[in-house]
Every structure is written in C-alpha cells, then in structure tokens.
Length: 206
Image 1 (cartoon, rainbow, N blue to C red):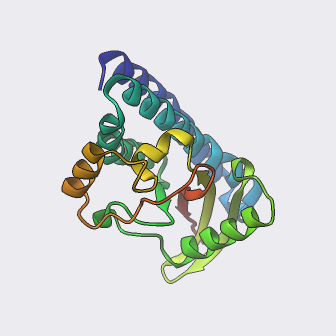
Image 2 (cartoon, one colour):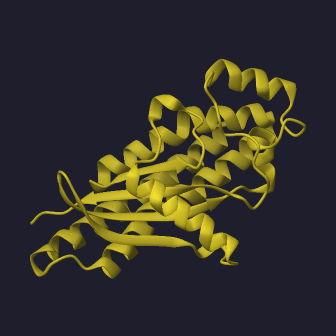
C-alpha cells in the first residue's frame, strides 16, 4: 500500500470511529424508551457507510498502483482490520458478508443475513436498485434482542478482475487466490450483480 493511501485511510478511519462512538452514545441515551429503529438505522449508516466508501477508494488506489493483486491484499488484510477497529470503537459488530464465501476462516452469513441476502436478490430481480437497498429491524435471537442492519453491495466493474468469470480473472490473480483462499467460491460474478452486503449488529439491553 502506498504511503499516501495509508495516511488517507487512517484519517478517514478516525472520522468514522468518532461518528461511531457518538452514534452509540446517542442510542444508549434513548434505550429506556425502547428501540427506535429509524434512529438506529441512521446511526448504522454513520458507522458503516464511511467504512465502505473508504474501502472502495483504497481498493481503486491499490489497483491503479499495483494492479488487481493489490486489491486482493487490501481485502485480505486491511478490510477486516478496519471493520474490527470500527466495531471496537462503536460497540457494534461491523462486517461484510458475501453471497458466496471467499475467506472461509471468517465464516459465512448467519441465518438472518442469508434471509436478507435472498430478499435483496428478489428485490433486484424485481427492478429495485442495489445502491439504495437496505434492511433494518430488531430481531429476537437466542442471546437476546439485537438491532440488525444490512446494506446491499453490488459488484463494481473493476471488481471482475478478482470476482469475475474465468476469462476475466488473470492467471496471476487466480494463483494468488488459490494460495490465500484455497476454498474460494467468490468468482463468476458480473458487474451490477449482488455481491454481498454491509452487515451491522448491535445487542439491545432489555
């Protein structure tokens, strides 16, 4: 990763973390009145969307500087670290999930996430745009109630270099993916297709 890209990423991360902390504090202040899904949805956007935007910007910069192989490294190393830092600062779990798994060690979507991904696919097939597609609700889970939020992620044209069909992924990238992700299933996508989602979870106190 270039020095300029790293500095920009760190500055944006600090801003995202600050917004995450403020959003979590605001949510706690209103917890006694019951969950406000609209307010928590707005907070989820403040926590997660800067993370997504900066990740896309960094991926584009790495592809320009180092080719598609650089993007593979960002997705493997930087994306999980950023998600972890935002999660730790906000108290919310922030992650990305895919319709097909690339890194089996990170696990796949849980039951609720699978249901929402299937819903996103149906909504897209019905003509809804992925850019504005999201879902938020309070879910009863074995460990208690939790606020869940997901925002759809579509495959960008540049992403076919790592997630496209066999004729779109170079031999060098295929070799890198085979080495890093021997059980990779996240190829064969076309631009505009549902790739996955930003997923945010926040436990709720009774």
